Length: 328
Ligand SMILES: [Zn+2]
Image (cartoon, rainbow, N blue to C red; front, top):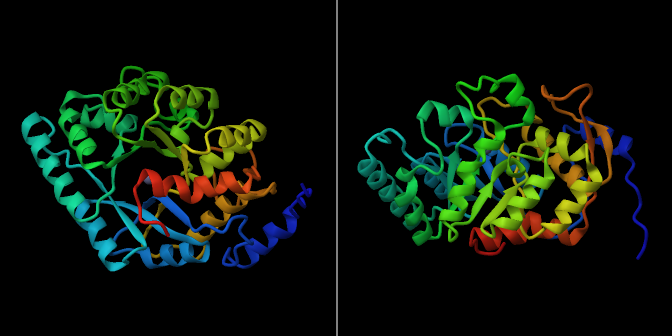
């Protein structure tokens, strides 16, 4: 095999900054990308996000919003967005009503093209709603998801440092370790539901933990979303991260967690797609061009330089298979 040219980090970085990240470097793989984790809305700067996606060869975006808004987006941008919805929690105290309302939502959604249900079950949600993912009130909802072949996208945990900064009060919050029990129970209770655990399973700090989860639960997948966090933690352990991505290439899905806002700064969406591209595809070492409040010192990108076949699986093939998408 020919030896790959090492990337000229400084030139690549400078070019990116100078162009507002509007000129993506050449891609390492031909297949179009599917971004399985974005937040978009009808009244916001969604066209700017879609334009950035197009520049970076991202053909489809799973857009998380309330069901009607998500479906409306799919109607407005045919073939570009895949609807993802959140459940209704207002009547969670009345188990039957809670189940009935959400089963109705799932059925109506599925008939209109819904593929993904988002569960934002991070610690403050668990506390505020007094609800965990293994709660029996969710049993009929997951049973219906299995019947309708819907995918669960779950945000379960935050960076380790957040347990020091925000979740240190043990009278309110569980430890990070305990917080994972709810997803483990749900994974084993519903083996027919594919679960995508967002943000590298919420634990890019501990690849050994993710190894164990992926080995134990064949219905578990991870997405690559949360740009700063993923780049920070995987870049810190490059060799282990590269090896992990190769070993689990069939279980990782590309996602960014781009969040559409109003009046976004010009490079908001392009910079994040650029960061993901150079991080996964090259061995660049350069400053991270967006702020990272959780970084100790200057945040850096240390690229993983993944092989093309691994990238094709993560960028495209796994999403087509897991989300049952028409191929693009
Ligand atoms: Zn998100």
